[in-house]
Image 1 (tube, rainbow, N blue to C red):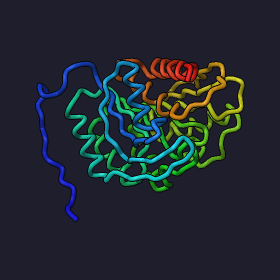
Image 2 (image 1 turned 120 degrees about the vertical axis):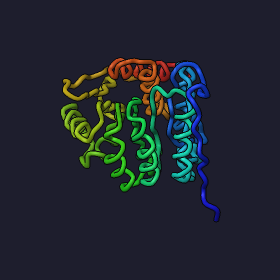
Image 3 (image 1 turned 60 degrees about the vertical axis):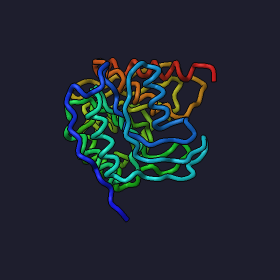
Length: 265
């Protein structure tokens, strides 16, 4: 079987596309359109932010289950990232589903050369229906290789617990403990999403280095929608690409998701 060739390319600055800074989305596709790269690109288009992409996996999903997953070879993922960074001015990077430890390492290798670009890492471990999208080896590589590159890490409560090796947080105090544990693994900020908590309001915890915990709260809506985690992370990346500070980007992204959930279906 013939190996994958990565052709050399070194365009000059004048060959790059002009216009506002883009967001580089590194994620898997979702055939249902509810989550994954389809959701990411839709969010960025609605926010008026250009996007480039690197597909890590092609998934066959319905709104209720994962049917099958095809992982893109890591060398091809690397080539996509390299080409995207050479093609446009990238103002922020959003990472979603990676799928395998080899892909995690390939992404980390490429992005270690782009440390000045803000990076939003949504640690996708399971699908909404419970399908495993990153195994334990991949999770270990993610903690070791990608957490130190992340500007904002956006786990939900089950993901935070898994990444910390703890039971799911049952109180706000436990969520602060787990967010601090994640912060010690290298990201500049952790936005621990509170959608899975049994509370009357939706309360997300923003924890940044050398700062007190901040609770970003809003009324809990009686609405369900796949891809809200993808949408939130992409909207944060959009804000960072436009020059917003982390807190401002997180607050604006939450407002976007609330409007998305409130919109008539």
